[in-house]
Length: 262
Length: 322
Image 1: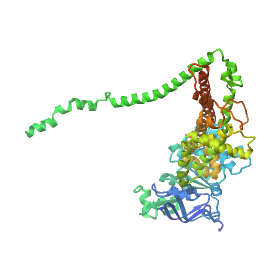
Image 2 (image 1 turned 60 degrees about the vertical axis):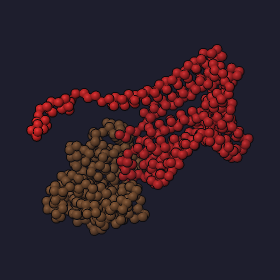
Image 3 (image 1 turned 90 degrees about the vertical axis):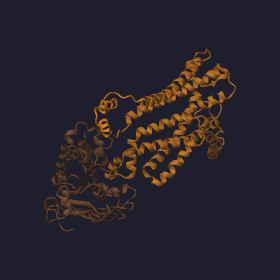
């Protein structure tokens, strides 16, 4: 890999001719996408076009669906993550995930953050790690006096930031976010978006969103997905967010971002 | 003629007819069927409660007769180590001891095995394996307990005797009855625990996997704690079933109130004793007859106590996920 000539040109993870099937149904078709390191990449598109499937193919979360299988490659740290000798457990430690609906464990706030680090054999100062993770997730000031209350006692927006803190505590390289703000109110959404801008200094972020304004506001790069005639999702355009929204190359992208479809 | 027809449909008569008024008003409407169903459901609920009350009443009344009789001393009843109604010895300890021993043995078998089965079925088994295993397991619960009783006596006991030697293991013993009882309640534990595990939302599992947890870590450290209240409920139902189980212990545990902590000796449980005594020619209003109810009351109190205890445990330790 050549040395990065400018910020954001180094590739963190790259899908090549990736297909994902659920049984005989092809959910995404021949997707090739290079995610830049320490940048925010948004995946947008109408519902059912395979955005989440693509995201979940990047850390093999799809495997939890019994009928799912993938073909093609996803290259991460110079290896195809679908190779036989890749351990999905280790992979998911490196590529963390934040889900659509906040899903803190029914444990204390402290335990929520410490849990992932602990199962991954973290042996340092747990108090410091929890504090650092909560600070990075912009939640520390709100919860520092109630670390031993249940994570579920927090508001929806706080829960989602707790889930982000939990993902950070494992020290991943990439954080995948599957519509992280779709269950939140506008103010909580804005906080998550601000948080993402801070996080990209240390992490590569891939976010799926059906909210075009959010992609336009918060991302550096945007991939647009669309269903073809067989209802398989394809990536129709990828580019720098500003450029893509100002001067879309594909007609369908233009139709989508101007609200004519989707 | 046509004029007339038009007048009817468009005239004011239709609008202020009672039918029209009823439609537009928000007045209370009678729904007799609704009331009928409500009444029926109430009766159903009331019947089950009344039955319980009736049972408690009969138990209490007959026990009262027992405790009030001059031959019975309340302190001796709870502390006495001999139960010999024929000679006026009413110490319930041997019976309670045998009941606890068989139940405990059953739980020692059923809890670890049942939880392992439940975790396997809910977290590991493929849909196909689950579809085959679950019904088979539930068949175990449908086997008549008398069959289990003779299985204990004619298969489990000889097995224990061949392993540990016929001198150590009596023909009738609590260990054999307890182990087989564990097999009996195994489906109860595993099936109810599996339901509790399956009810834990998928999102919690995904959260764990997303943090790089293995299947085992996810199952044991996230799913199991979240399902704890359901599992505790399953265990309590199972213990109550074990304490109340009659046929197996009547056949295989022994016939004779015997105070022993050796699981390979014969001993008679509370239920086993009730069955044996009431099976003979017992006259009403005799002290023997009343003693049965006193034992029954004790059984009832034990299961009640277990229920209360489990509620406390669950309230204290459960992880609420919604």
